[in-house]
Image (cartoon, rainbow, N blue to C red; front, side):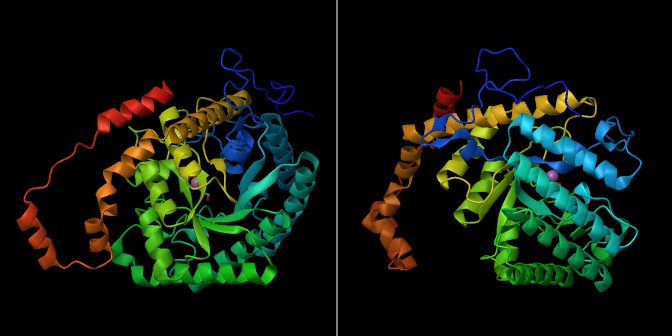
Length: 437
Ligand code: XLS
Ligand code: NI
Ligand code: NI
């Protein structure tokens, strides 16, 4: 049986002139961009939670998306049907990776043991589906935020019993990821933060979180999980102050607790926006520190101010993202995971195709533009030239520690006022537009 009869075969590349809403205009998976195919560069993943479990519910209204795959009254059957739908969708779309939370793929049981059994049943089912389709797991994760037991956090909970529950759940989720050959495992601190300082011992909570991550690192070693661990920064929502608020704050956390060698960052565009940063900034922070791992590719609504998780369609944004990805030499374990959901009014299954096709096309175009900008070299040359004086003898001596404040005062007394140079922002914006337009 087919859940997506509107797309008979795999979505194909028809090129720029095509008017077919169910065809790629730019994403041509085999097309080479500087030696690597588009598919190899972009490593697209579909996220299970929004795409197959998203309901369109919002604080003002109930579900608008009643998925045919969730009709069965028997929870395990519904979970298997959902998995059928997921792999049909991903195969037809032609993506190579997927991502999931434990509770997306398998229902929570009446007790922990039952939840473990449910997860195992669905992991086995997913394993067959992966083998049939060749689709691979980019990363797995655990949902440590939906169940009421986590209302005051998981690892950062005031109650060690809840910490233990979360730890047990993460243990099983990492094991599931290992069983499915996952390339990574993500920690997004769903409720690891606080709403009011009045009831919160922040120092203790951050230490708990570090301990939790160390335990996961140790367990991964013990069971032979060699995938990459990621943390995913987000400044707020659901809590007012999430501890992993931005790339910088995550770096501080990882350095403080000596975790730099074990975790990289999974950066999400809409989370960057919520943190008051551009995605390119977050990426540069992570990249400069050598811990840019993977991307949750979405975008936010600039006017709304919450995590609207929209599909990325803005080519300036995808270009900026791909410039940073190319500069770091491409993804190693990570990829572009569409942590994005269709709008409440887009309640038909065909809307899921439109959304992903649009996102993939926007990134394919962004990749080509980014490649052209880097090949052209003028942007890089400008930045190098801008700092060239730091490579002069005078500049190097300062950085190498051979100059004192007295020396610098002498310099100023001898040379007077520095010559000001334009930052040329507008010229550089035009340069980018040469490639985008
Ligand atoms: C929520 C996060 C979440 C993570 C996975 O805002 O983006 O979806 O990616 O737990
Ligand atoms: Ni995310
Ligand atoms: Ni998000």
